[in-house]
Length: 298
Ligand SMILES: [Zn+2]
Ligand SMILES: [Zn+2]
Ligand SMILES: [Zn+2]
Image 1 (cartoon, protein in one colour):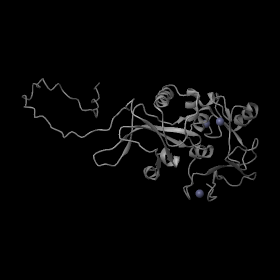
Image 2: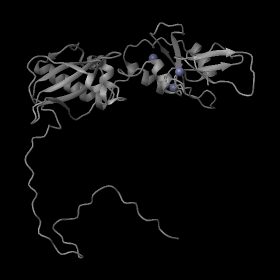
Image 3: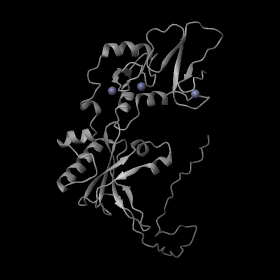
Image 4: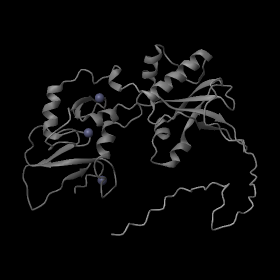
C-alpha cells in the first residue's frame, strides 16, 4: 500500500528565521522598509461619536447578486461626521434594520469611506429587537446620538450579534396560527416555499406564514421552520422571491417566476404558485412548469 502524496496547503509556512536550514547557508536578511500608510481601524473607538445614517434603496445595499448595486446606494448622514467616528447604517427594509456598524475613514486619496468594524453584522439586526432590548425607541433618521444612548446602542448591537432575538419572540403577524388548516395543506403539498418533505416519512412541524401581498392567492401559506426563519429576516426575501428561488428559471425568457403546472385531478386546492393544467392527460409526457412572465410551458 502506498501513501497518497500529501496535499500542499495554500498556506505559507514561515520557518523560524533565526535557524538556518541544513541545506542552505544562512543568508543575510535585508530588512524590507515599507512606507507607513495609515490603515483603517479594525475596531470602533468606544469614545468616538456615534451617528445613525440612513441608506436607500435597501435592496441595493443588502442584495449581493450584482456588484453595480452598491454604487446606487445613497447614504444620508447627520451633519458633522468626522473621520474616526462610528456610523450605524440603518435601512427601511421589510422592517427597520441595522445593516452595519462602521468607522468613517478618510484614506490618503481623500475619498471618505465607511469601513466595517468588528463584530460584523451578517443578516441585519431588527431595530424592533434592539428597541425591545433597550426599552426605548431609536431614531429612524440621520442623527448623532447622545453619548449615553450611543453606548447603550452599541452594547445592544453586540448582544444581538452574540445572542440574536428570534423573530417569534417579538410581536408578529404569524402569531395566531390556524395550525389545523396549515397541517392539512402541508401534508398534501409540503413546504409552500421550498417543497420540502412532501413525501418524506418524517416531516418538520410546519408553520403558518401570513402574507401581505393582497393578490389572488390565499393570504397564508404553510412553510417549514427554516423557510419561516428566512421569511422573517428583517431584510429577507418576499415569500414569492423565496419560492421562485427554489424553482428553475424559465428556459425561454430566464424569468424567475416559475409556476408548477399540475395535471390531472389535484388532491385539494393547489397551493400558492401551483396552477392546474387540466384533467385530460395526452401523450407520454406533459409539461411540469409554466412561466408566470411569458407563459412558456416545459
Ligand atoms: Zn421550506
Ligand atoms: Zn411568518
Ligand atoms: Zn418565461
